Image (cartoon, rainbow, N blue to C red; front, top):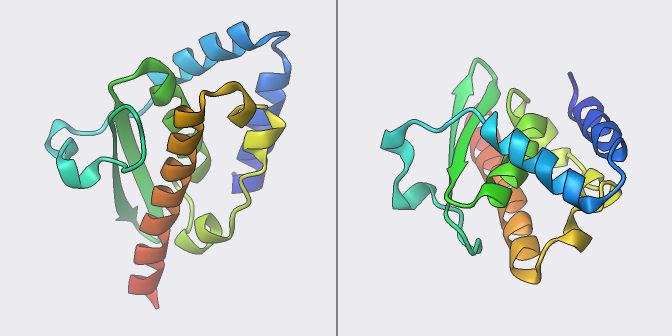
Length: 140
């Protein structure tokens, strides 16, 4: 599936809920289904800077696509990173770099997060794109 298709799927899923309490519950469920990062990658170098809670992300190339795993010590943050990993994991580095993240606004996520969590969300996106840039550079 393309990044755009995955984003549209997430927008559709979030539109099924009437209020933000249900959406938060759904995000918590998504966080529980997150492909967990191996404990050996839960190191300081893999912590995303700019997040209030701890978020670890590991990236590796599988063929010519990036596979991401992650974890967080906060349940809502874990749901947020789960959404981003669902969209970006298994994609080509160039597609991740070029990807628009307007689906975040479409589901209303940023406006329903505290300012510190919203900043953390931006930091997560930035870090995933930085991994993609690093891998794209290696491919060229």
